[in-house]
Length: 114
Length: 110
Image (cartoon, rainbow over all chains, first blue to last red; front, side, top):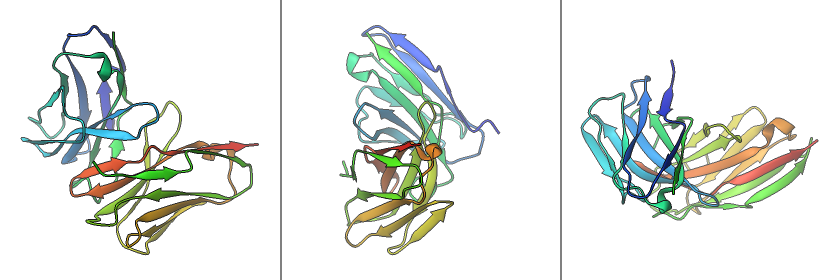
């Protein structure tokens, strides 16, 4: 099993550009989520999904869109990149609800917005 | 936004010494408390998921306790080794969401 994979590993964008961060898992996990990690702060939840076709907002959803058309994939779209979105982004998945099951994290995407 | 606090922010331990640190979380509407270990240049990896008041879990030299009534959990490292150097994150679970603390960074000196 590859576990949770994320692409790209690094990305530099200019303000106003859009892009999609890819996340895939091969563990047949129902629950997937996106976090951003900034210095001095914990991981903050952006969006999450409890199954294909179902998504919901987390703590910091503004400026990001998600969709979940398959169990395996959960892409994160930046609509119009801003310097405040410079961060490291982690995708995670877990079996069933995110509450009672350990999260498996991807390797992260380091995004810089100029 | 759920307030999850970890203290201290960082600590240095001599190899062989034991240490512990704290995670504080809201005591209402508790679902679960997670602990993750995060090594530099890697991704967070789960240590424990704890759900019941009074839970104690152990993995090797690392153990954790949970008090849901007062809203805190302790993580203990017994006989610290250099490979224990990492940031330890706790996360409070409320329904489908996890709220993470900022972490405690442990540095073990040989």
